[in-house]
Length: 150
Ligand SMILES: [Zn+2]
Image (tube, rainbow, N blue to C red):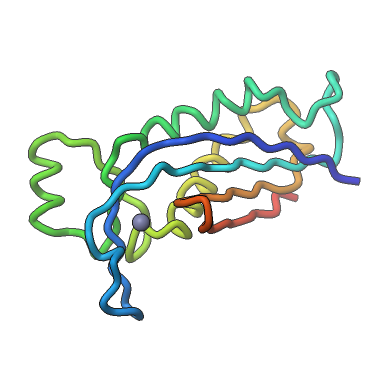
């Protein structure tokens, strides 16, 4: 038996995707997205209130991570350019996404890593079985990653 909850979060950010496979690619241009993130958490037991976790507790973990990405230039290993240097020098908000390029897949993995490392702060976290992150760049496109927690 497994129970699952999910919550949506939103942020605005810019990035540049340098495809090593498809060229030319429009995504090579610096552009922005209104990202939607779905955080989906499963548990094999409900807590004392018959919940996987109170959404307020989930917000306590997820919102600070999302706020760090909001209105940020997301960059990765292939983005160490003059433009990025100018962003850093001018103290514009930037966030390094591990990987070659700040793709939706790598953003999803970044969020999975950040969120899963903080889940143990939540009550009854030893009941959690799975964490899934879905990152939507547009209405039609998304990437997801999933981690088995036990
Ligand atoms: Zn994009």
